[in-house]
Image 1: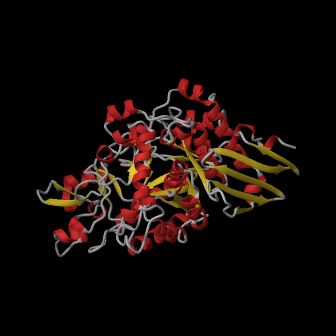
Image 2: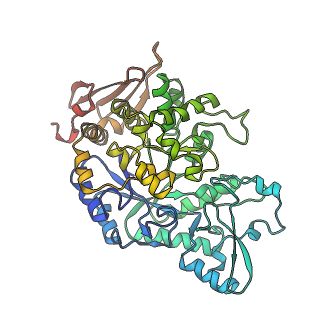
Image 3: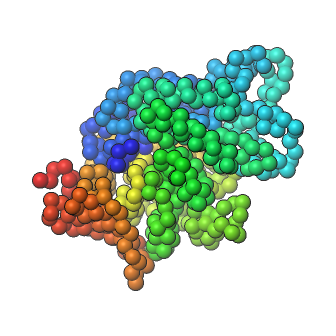
Length: 501
């Protein structure tokens, strides 16, 4: 993975299709991104979970393009794709064959049934231990063509049938997707929902030791094909540190809520503590296709007393209410029951609206993001400093759609001219191409003013230093370039290092 910023985007919601996206990346966005995370572009892109329930995980939805189009993007911008580990669509040909043929189906072994996990039966106590991302039990009863009834594992919805990932059929299925990715130039896979993939009786069946072992095995299989691995898990922060030691990259999901807390409270103390311990092999985000995570800064739900969170309960309450207040209540419409979440572990809102539309605060948060060690990713709505799409939320009833706007060509062209977007693009180009970011990162010691956070990169004979004041919401970037010392307070004035001589 290149040490440059990456764009996170759907194939259809920013530029219409894959060819349009390539034109955008090589045109107005040239130099701003060194890679792209293509959210599910598989067939179909518009299933029950916005592409995360593929009917055919190895095919590109013809409405957005072909594998040739993916390869064309990969030729200039390394591509990350999702390996949807836990489940397939109920409309997949494999599951439809299982429904029709029952135990005689050649795909019967692929799907996880209740009795495979609990061969001796199950009771309320065992079911009550399961960690749930959605309301209700993770089970769906189906009647097969041979007139037998089976209870299927359906962790997310009844339209998403869990795979028995440890069966020979499950292994072959996932390997076939990795093979297709490798053939078409995919350099990184994001292991989607992998934390739920292993079901172990008597446990939460979420991120258990058996899950870690499975991640190790799947990571090795990807690496054998020349593909790097990013693990997607919203979980207790110490668990993220443990995962980081076993894979190529992990998400820094704690950063978005901690950055908001720092700006709301005007203090860097909690954010600074995280900067001191966070893994450096991280993909940093402020926004994604999902909501702003709360669980990532909370305590270990299994051991609350002994494993506190990065924020305490009162701070988390203030954070969540702060998002709702700053978004004028629109995020509340999209969170909790509206998003089919069993608890308030994500708040659905654009990052700009979580800051009350304050573009200065937004750019400050982005500056901290890109100066932290790791690979910064910018979600397409965040790239264009987008607001909550309440109309789309009302149209679909899906909470996360508030941050999944469909942009027209005219909207993109207009937003690219906005000063805040130009500022962000300048910041990204500076981050991608300034030689100091290939060197050593230092967090400056805390001073008397706890609102100030400062950090520095030193490498290749150059320096790039960031100082932010969370109370005044100011930014200062001091740097050298070709031996000349410079200082800017408006990131729009940051030079593109490629043009300096």
